[in-house]
Image (tube, rainbow, N blue to C red; front, top):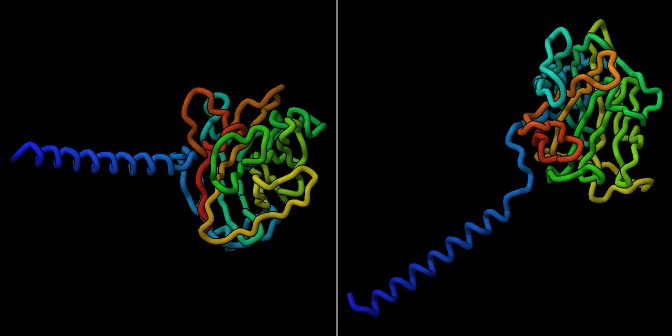
Length: 255
């Protein structure tokens, strides 16, 4: 093979190499920022009656999921805490059923905006477009703390604690140590959400994906909560990241 032929082959190889690298770079750039690897799951379609009894057929057909990841505190024992949950959806709401066994229910802060995370409460995390990322002081995602009295608290962009009671409707029945929480959650587009604005919930449809996680703050007569138990695996030493980073949420797909 002569010199010109070798040069031609070398030039063709370089062109193919550049094309390959360019495509590889483009594929990497299109990878979502969401880094969730720990949980991907689906929610059945159905509209339950919110009465705290959870005896609807639609709930019976839904799958139980574990609430067992200790984000704060020492490992828990079944006599202190155990939890599991189910999810449903219809066009108007996401529905969460949580069965929580807790030996002590505590609400020691009469002011619902003061240290609300140190009382027993259910916490629902929702990222409407599953984009992940920071949501500490913005509405990229919501972290709804639902108190024993049903009041709902999250943080506004100005870093103030505020009520979002209109976002979640809750019914809870406690028998002995076991509480059944039924919650209807309205889903909002955080990119368009405005404080004191006319915010219209999203209409949900099959195939939609959103970021989702569930957690429970557990206090047994202490000044601060002893445990924070979540639904997703969080890497690293500091696992209390859900109120800041929507990237630790699971990915929920509506069936």
